Amino acid sequence: MSPAVHAADLALLANRPTLPTAARIAVRLAVVVVAWDTRARSRRALGKLAPDMLRDIGLTPREAQDEAAQPFWKA
Image 1 (cartoon, rainbow, N blue to C red):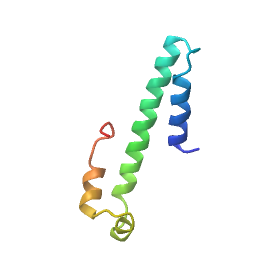
Image 2 (image 1 turned 120 degrees about the vertical axis):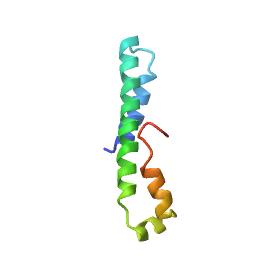
Image 3 (image 1 turned 45 degrees about the vertical axis):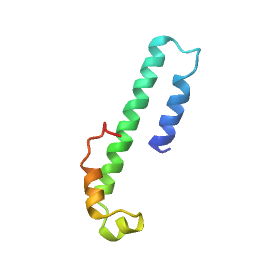
Image 4 (image 1 turned 135 degrees about the vertical axis):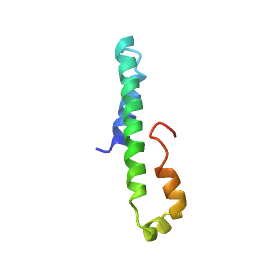
């Protein structure tokens, strides 16, 4: 499964009213960590794409470089 699927599953779990408070907090923290990891991996991959691949997705090399340079915690 992709990390995005895991994040969605964790988000559903975090909103269950039957979870104890500590578990709900732990799950919400896990959701954030998975989102950060997904964002970091995506940005690293974007930074490695060739110019012709960037054109295919509608980005200039400069736009890709700017996005790849952002820290993982910034959306």
